[in-house]
Image 1 (cartoon, rainbow, N blue to C red):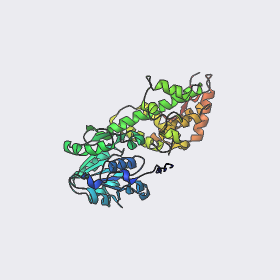
Image 2: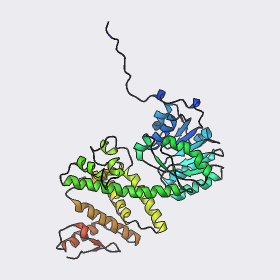
Image 3: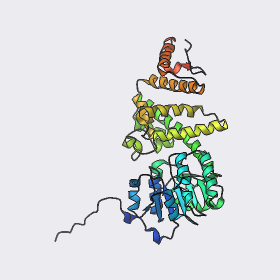
Image 4: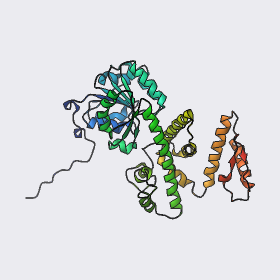
Length: 390
């Protein structure tokens, strides 16, 4: 007799793969903000057996979670009503300080329905001052607030390997939040009081922006000289240039699988978000008098990349931006000089004429006997072009 074939079910999302929260006895948790980071973070809480209540302005994005047993709430206040109280927690992952304030203190915000002794944890990257403001508001309702921005990107969120940088005014609150953190990532790092987690995150992302930019420039240079990018990656990843932007999140298509560069820079950490983080970092630096000249230069480059069509693409698309300028490096240099001059004119309260500025650059370059390159152009403190020396 012939063997009876055993049917193989297709690979698909299966709610049965998730343990049923009611049997686990773990405190409930809410999650607000189900974007590229929030959705996989919430999914990992559900996988860990948590009773999960979620909210997002776009209800459709919650479908994978509700199919697995999560409950969708129509507002932050409804999330608070469902899970708050002793042992309960609500996590938020939002795009701006304004969004954080609205979710916590708006008419239908968390604090309008939050019960005392609830943990409120914001994982957004926003101004440290926003975290301190929300902490004061939460304390008035008998709740503990922690700022806990993350590092690790979308891959880290999916694999529950995020690094949480935590600011907390309470030892007990940090201890109570730690089990939630470890279900979404590595053991958390307590950076200090409320706001300290964000201060560390901004410093980290400042370094990351420069690291990715340097990596992209290195691979673009190697390719222009005929070097196989795979060979360059093999060397860099075991040498002094080794870094996360090369060995884990390489911006060159074809080097790694499962990263944004492998899917035309879709998903991941958008260039517009990196620009936001750089703005926050530079604002923080200005407030304390910390010099950040490289980061200021990087911000102009990412801004130029965004203006040329990469705003919604992962920030590793800075490599594609550089490749698009291959053979015309002066086009980037002139645009950067223009950006600097515009900023200088704005700071001085003067109007800026980009057309006239471009003519000044051409004239200034023409006056030198050096090879025509916009990198030799000097800009005065008033934003005016100064012809370079011969």
